Amino acid sequence: MATNPLLKLNEVGQSIWMDHLDRGIIESGELKNMISEQGIKGITSNPAIFQKSISGSDLYNPDIEKGIKDNKSPQEIYEMLIFEDIRNACDTFRTVYDETHGLDGYVSIEVSPHLARDTQGTINEARRFYEAIGRENVMIKIPGTPEGFPAVEQVISDGINVNITLLFSVESYLQAAEAYMRGLERRVEAGNPIDKLASVASFFLSRIDTNIDDRLDQRLQEVGTETLNSEAQLNQIKGKIAIANAKIAYQKFKEITASDRWKALEAKGANVQRLLWASTSTKNPDYRDVMYVEELVGRQTVNTLPPNTIEACADHCNITGDRVEEGVQEAYQLLESLKEPDVAIDLDQVMDELLEEGIDKFVQPFDSLMRSTEEKVKRLASSRA
Image 1 (spheres, rainbow, N blue to C red):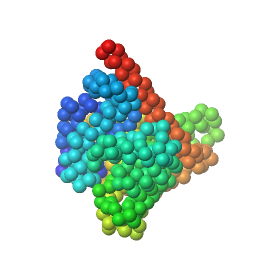
Image 2: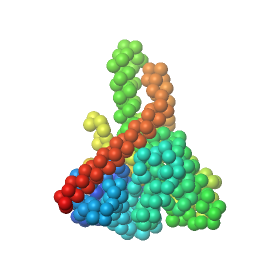
Image 3: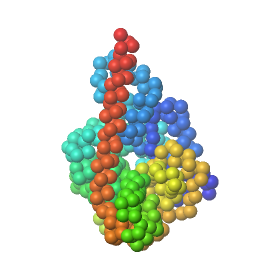
Image 4: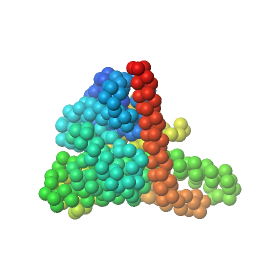
């Protein structure tokens, strides 16, 4: 039995991916070491991650200068930089991909967040990214918006791996699973193989608790506790909704994979679309920093962790089995309690709000990344003159 908690997670059937990518960890060999020593089995990236990586490092300067020499636009230079990082990361994870027969070893790259409400634009960009990167183990991230789900279906039917991101509600997860299955069914109908395709459904956590906790605090400030049945009732809800929501989503995952519809696809070689726990760094310092790891250990799931949470988990995670299966009935009751008059939180409204905020939280760093890339291009171009 492994003593490193991260390796214990692998033993119980949960894969750990890292929510971070930059050129430095690839070139230094750090990423390769994390794969061998920490059991890291994949990587997720997003515009915010690339914004920090490119703007904060000189490692990209030689490629930027080459792009300038080749008369490339800032947009073309940006794509050249991130595609190269994604390719190199894919190559680093290729052994994991081969050893797990395509279960793990993926590197995710997100289409432009400006396309979150554009179905055809998302499809076109996903196809272009997949072809340009040219790696079997790249996974294209598509947001779980009403416009994103039909894009997922089409891209899966094209034979492209998809990470469906920004899923907050159980209903949105069900739509993600439906889009994946429809895409697979279309490939089967067309006589195309489905055994080399993979997908994850990225279900977000900490942002839910942050939103709910803020609402609870505001309610306490507005009406005080004298008109409420119990202040303790509200405090009992704090920091609990995201995990409860995820546990219910996992039960839906089990129902889907046990269905006749899924079994028919599985018989033709389909790979299960795993739930991926995202937004797993604890935002409230009063909460245990690894609670979104410990509470959601589950078979056939992925947990994507930022580097600081990986370090924390390696140091003091307490892994005690499939805890995602514990307290399921209590999870349903907890979500129901939000409807009580003393709480009065509309969870659907929260989830809609979080989706819009999530898109904006990717748009802003994407735009910042484009500006910083343009600034670097201008600065390096002027130094060449």
